[in-house]
Amino acid sequence: QVQLVESGGGLVQAGGSLRLSCAASGTFSSNNPMGWYRQAPGKQRDLVATITSGGITNYADSVKGRFTISRDNAKNTVYLQMNSLKPEDTAVYYCNTRASVGPYGSMDYWGKGTLVTVSS
Image (cartoon, rainbow, N blue to C red; front, top):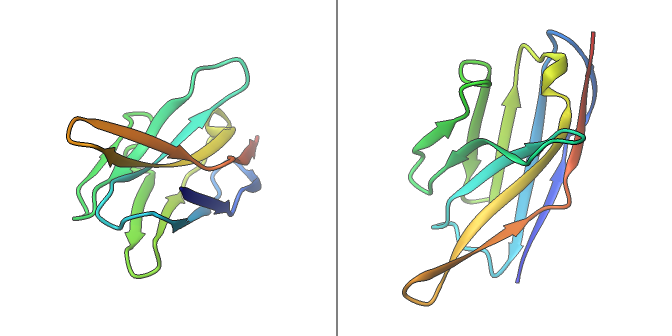
């Protein structure tokens, strides 16, 4: 089992910054990709950013240029630095990692989520 523990959510004003952290433990492998997703009330859960073990990143268009995902493999931790926050960034942010299951499958692990609220 993989456990993902998130921290850093909170209330910020528009234009402010916040850094989310997610520490992985258990059977987590630093070779696995990690990512951040978010879900606003009444909305689908959407990808925010992903990062491979080698540091290759991918971002949703809505956050590109404002958010930065990074990881510290020695600490089994992934970060999301959020700058220039907008009210539309308000959502529950979920940490994710994907592990291989057998030769053909995979399984996603999720944190419990941390709430980010951006006020205007």
